[in-house]
Length: 322
Image (tube, rainbow, N blue to C red):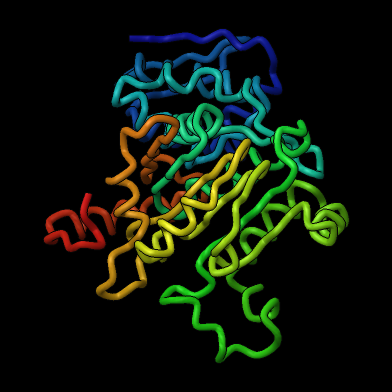
């Protein structure tokens, strides 16, 4: 069977084929097909030509929307195609969450990310759980910056447990800010990328942006704010309850974590407990991301899949229950 796809622009075909035709070679191998450019159309024959055509058509849609296509992206599309979910990715390119300081649009790259972003827009509190590389922190920061620019909130507050096992900072050199800076660096980087370093520092000085360890949240009421708790798997149940009850009027709160990276020893993770206690409560949503939503290098996704497979048959303890 031979399938054909019309190509309206030659530059799109060049992006589709990739450097040294690496994208097309990957598709040829995975679907056992031959792919060739014939004038203003692409010809696909042999093997799984039909499903390969659907993947290529989706790749062209993404290219039209300004997205770069690489091996990880192709593998994600192939996975969706095998599950009959390829149509669900439609519209990801059209939804710009924010614009970075360098003018780069921030968009969702996976179906899971799209659900995560929509959950934040629709709810006051969102708990998101997923592995490293799924964009949990970066997308939440992008939404926070967007909300501030639209004057929906007056402050952006970002926090995380300063040290995995209880915020024991005394052994580190320097004052408190020097002690916590290494733990908050991912948050600094995301904010700097969105605002630009100079604007970010000005907002930090004016206390419009606050980046602080979780211990600093105690006793406060956080109103008119977009609040993000990162690395929440390393909060204790007491810390999590304290944090969740800080939310005030006209605020949004996002709680992110990876329950495969808990460093609390025998203590129960506040994130796992909150997931179960708050599931189904009005104005709260729990979003689960997986290896499919990893947008870093393909190797990261493969590492996560390997660990998931290795741990699948292990007995669950109180810090890994589902």
